[in-house]
View: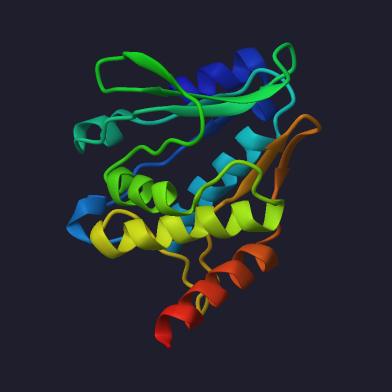
Length: 186
């Protein structure tokens, strides 16, 4: 009902419903393909929005014990630099200089970033470092999904620069994941 009310006020192009999972992610069960596709579409629409945009998460997600801990990254045109803000479950806000993670897989992902991130990474290197952090996190956290090249399930990866936010094509994400997994299989 909230999503419908917001759509009536803002317009359907400015609102997306982020559906809850039918099961708890920490039970080791991912969402159905339909729910995963709807969540991915909502996230895609939010990234593509050029003005105000609202993602509505149902109360079911909160009742499932899922706390939303936002992580915001962007480019500050006034400072001419990237900025990252993260929050804790109580609403406290901090700014991080280089990288940050959140969620149940945040600690292993951050440990991965500590080892691989460095200033001045190329676009390709940054994509690889990000994908590798997700793979590392998924090894230790059932709620973090690793790239699944066989089924074509890939993380949404974006590059943020002074020119704007750009989605990284799935082919590039898959190539990075494939290279990492092949190296680890040796």
